[in-house]
Amino acid sequence: MTFADYCEWLFKIGTGWLGWPPAIVLSSTMRELRLAYEGKVSMLKAIHGGGEKSGPVLTSARDVAGVRALMKGLGARRAEL
Image (cartoon, rainbow, N blue to C red):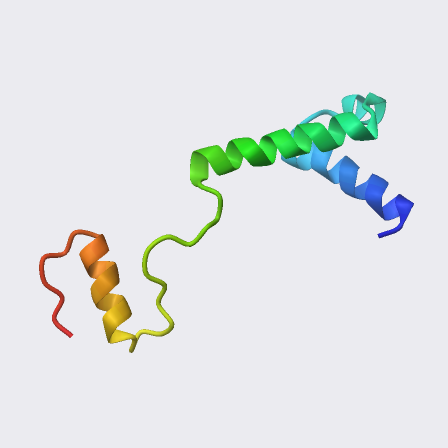
């Protein structure tokens, strides 16, 4: 990534992800923007989870064991497949 690309990415983060007005983004240091971005990502992970896969992962609709495990995890008493 070039320096110009990095500056453009920071501007997108500041205005898009953080919702800051362009004047605030442009008056912020790169470190401030990066730290604010990292804080936003941490907040979203705390709210929505860190992206780690939990529970069964289906490889296809024909994955009978995976479908049973998924249904059981959702509280189904019996999954007929």
